[in-house]
Length: 558
Image 1 (cartoon, rainbow, N blue to C red):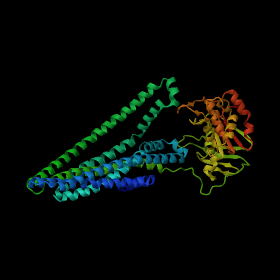
Image 2: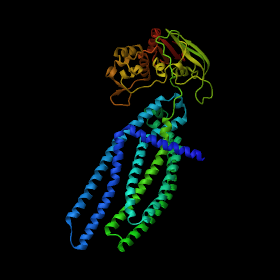
Image 3: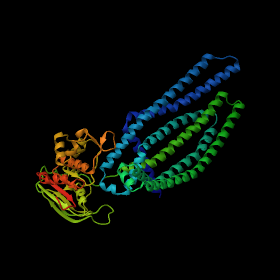
Image 4: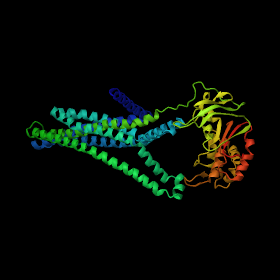
């Protein structure tokens, strides 16, 4: 148990270190500026406190002696106001730095999440634990690192200010310092306990939050809008959402009410300490042990010392709180894909001579209860259209995923010109296969962009039009307001939506735009009308020239 706790602390400290390194790499200049402003802001209040003491003593002496030294008083007032002005300017500079840094850090982390999400195997998306981890990382990553930086700089600033305060209070009595420290201990313990409790509560209830978010998305998403209205599901989903949120709210209230009792006890302890110190200072002033200026300085030093202690505690507990939550981000960023490019990949053939061979392929999805494919064999020759027919659930689409190495076979292998596809560079393999998936994406971009996505590094306007003509998409594109520059979908303004058949023809044009030697068509005409289907089928043999065409269909018609 002790070893586990020790290893957890090591991991958490490593996460905090990695967070600070991440923030430094995001923008070194802003990071250093943030630390520098913190140091300056920590020293200035102590200078002002001492100047205030000198000013009050100067005024008290003048009153007692019947002579006012205006030059000396003016000097102290100017220094006091100058330090005040500098402190306010530093506060303004700190806000600007925070504003700039927050934006940059949010973008930096979003980019890291996007990169990691696109690197991971498709199998991760089949795992609910992955979605829990990603949900926690995504929800908190935009602000947690900035909070860690805030806690870290708060600790540095509080330690500097506290050190100066201790020096001031030590001139009167070390007992004041001891009381100040012990007065803040209950608050420190309570906040650490609360942080841990709330972290584990949030972690245990991730599924509840995700389900509530999912229902909210169903109620507000355009994709689900038609079915929700036609089946009259709005009330059902709203009630389901409200029940979940009621459970979450009631549990949040319950846990916070229990924890607030501990807060009240800590506040009472602090108040008793304040009473004891004020009484000591009054006795010292009345007895002549300290001047009125010293009384004001020591009283303010104690009050500020308490504030610095509280800030130090908030910084430490905030660091503890955020290191627990930042664990979610680094848990996600540390995930590794299993499907990777081999150390010494073989070059993809410039021209495929013999074709593709599926040799005794057996595959089941992660946590699947049965094999989707078992000892499957198929040879796909160049310059031909190879059709795979079968009922739903037969594993037709799974073959495409295996060919792209979105998953790897459990047994057997897939070979291109005799080379196992696992031996190719992953990027090169996928670049040499073009596909239209059955569940193609409807991109809310222009027509031109929708087609160009088939080979994003190439812009060939003539080929874009040829691909659209081959897929019959050109028939409707010519009637759009801005031809190939028309923005599609309904997500943005000044755009035009398409029917599912038109979207499919556009997705087919995207697949045809690529120069890839392998073309995979998964139910490419399922949404098309009879005329468009006939036109496309008539061109299939033409598409297979100098190419491998794999046609997935449940229909007996070509």
